[in-house]
Image (cartoon, rainbow, N blue to C red; front, top):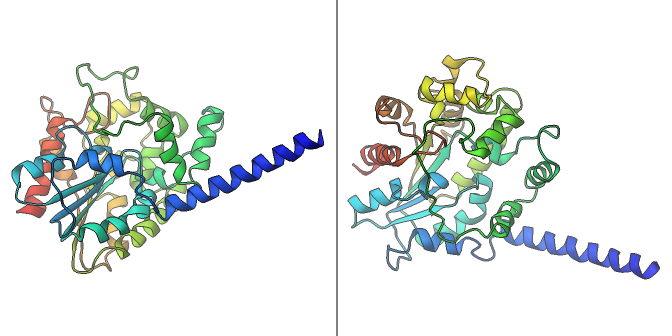
Length: 325
């Protein structure tokens, strides 16, 4: 019995040390953890090491097939454009690798994409022990403290190095067919999206954490580089077509006018709180996207909150007119 306890104790110590060392390695990015993903997104750009024209940092929106980054590359083949986008990560994870990538590429321009739909719950996950399974609750709680947990989860799911994701848009909107992650988020907190946009209750604290991480990020940017922070809005911010769909997923929106403001609180606060960085420009495409989204030309998938092919084209057009021209 004593031997068993001794071995168990030793195993716990070894596991604790291993987890600690791995977490520290991830936070300081001692190896290129996302090398396969970055290589996949930039496999057709040739051997680029220094002085790139544009370094674009995003998430799943910029890994979609024929995404806006690829469209920019197609129009400007003479430009050196590097895509550093990883689905499922937020500003905390970006801060682990961005310094090394800035040093490697020495970019003239940096574009950082914010997504209002989940960037605040990336810095602190939702919690609802009554509605969520114990494994899900533990995973979200632990990854608030162990950033490498998101990376490990991707690897354990045999995450494909070719990270471009395809979506189907053949069916009409249906709560049963909608992206299950978003359904789960509304089940966890039916006001999470509303509070993310208008910054209410505990989402004020989430915003403060996000702001702190953004300060860290922007302080790592070269002073002689142009930095563009552009906000992709959640589809329901555009119009009532998407908003009604979210309500059918049990989403609750206390004040629709505030939620659908062109200058919504999340964006306004970020622009004001980070205005001390003189080389940073904030871009808000919501009005442009609202004008382009029509009944016969939706910009977001019917059963997923990502941009579809038309939406990718419009983000490309917006960035082309705002930055490249």
